[in-house]
Length: 141
Image (cartoon, rainbow, N blue to C red; front, top):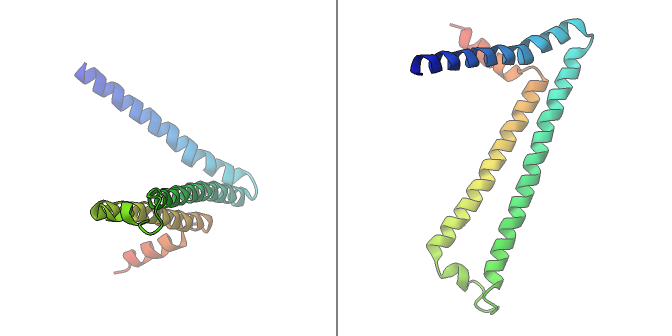
């Protein structure tokens, strides 16, 4: 089973790689060569997909901040006494600090991911000018 399983796995990887190359490289190249203005259409389609991903990320971030705000307000209001509203949060200060840091980290990671996705979106749309400049600099002696 070891040698036969390895051969089957290699065959599946090779075939899936051939299929991916056909779908992601050969087909778009064929379309660009044979259809007038197809490059602009494919560029706009990729821009549309990336903007949709940014929209989903935005919806998730808004929902996340709403949940975080609700949890914080619930923790403060749950005490019932306006004078001692911070007691639930201050009763365990280390837990409160760690929880706030986790909330901050999750939001920060989503913001960094969103910024990176935005940059990649515009790089795709403009045919990767930054990458081209980086590659040209690395070729110079």
